[in-house]
Length: 601
Image 1: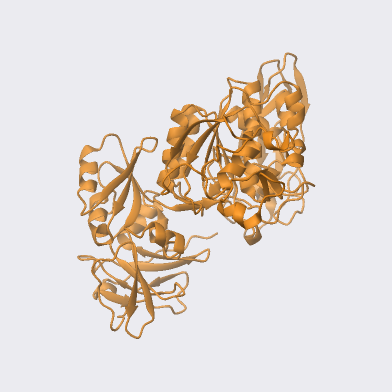
Image 2: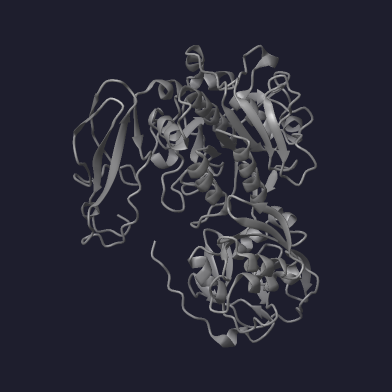
């Protein structure tokens, strides 16, 4: 994709407090100009407010983190802008991308481009969604990350009008804030400097976004019974389920939860939505109610119940990150995240937290890819987009890719999902009286059947627990590598299935694992005639006691499934011997000069 130039907009554009948008054929970026008759500033609005503009069809004012307010109609179309005090001469650009409308003031553009300010803070389409408006009802929710102690920066932020600290996020060295809409401009001044940089001590400003919830044959399908027979059932391993809560009275989950904590806006850890109970029983249910028929993948693993999603199935980024911190402090080996939301090219708070906790604590985060596959490629949700996450798509009981299973690549071009698992018509524990139980009913009694990558994910979390029991010293990278390497591929691309449907029976017994689990060659700009070959190293590890000789081949296809040109991919060696308990490395080379001279080839 070619980058679009960002031309400066005339200072004369911003000389009035309420302006209309020029929506003519100006390409992907439009300047804001003109005046909206009859629209005046309204005092006392918070994150969003319903308003009426005389004769203009104005439905809401959406407050940006800069304090500027965007006027939209009932269809979400941008009609104009009301400037915060002192911002009348700041140029503003309107951009359309991937079906979203962004209203981006010039003093924020560089910070967004540098990844220091979250572009979602200017995504009017996202900010106008019902779930976001409900979350921001009392004011703008943001997460501010700091560098070091940053005592002065923290004090300035807390002194920004009526700003309050909602929670502290240790992993991110950040604070989740609530700022009244009228004080957003004061917060913006506190976190930025006049030269267009973040204030000293401020590292990031993120939107505190909204996330939502995304067995008998399926457990056998991934090979779990064979692993049970070998003596591995998850004993001694802890799985944290960060979800809508867990019904601890269900016979399949009774006595399995080691600790519980509520990070949602609901009053307690009870699962009134029904999603978390279903997920937990897939990962580690005992099957007691069904006499073992609906046993989970790791039935003797311990569970942590982190309620990060409300009784309506929604949660804030900051609450989910706080749940991750808690799970780490409680000694979780595996964290299941059957949740997600829209991704952006930048690193969001949940992606950052997964990266840091994985590296520092060795925890494996198993995350749903999302259920937007019907929309095609590039639909993997965050935080499944995190590089360290083991991201899971869904297949049915015949290994056919579920139409709803989100596809890659990630916004950064990364291969996602990493693997697939059964996620269609999965039967697991029901939480009586919950939202889902009322919708689909119990059949058989005590259980319900639903589909989604949310259901595929705990199959993999349970498999990781079995593998962790087999190799207790392994950290996230080794667990992930083994599960990815042992998966069974289907007739789909890596961006659809990763390496394929997991086979935990293979993962437990295999002797050779590879690192990295997927290879990224970056983006080679067109034309390709002067490209340099790109080299990546693959390292094979032998877990066995005897040397293993591997015969290596490489094959590639273009986006349409056609074979790559001869020599496009090549290996540094066709055969490699991996010594017992040792490692061997081989080069993988790509030469994009052989890919043709078409744009995008």
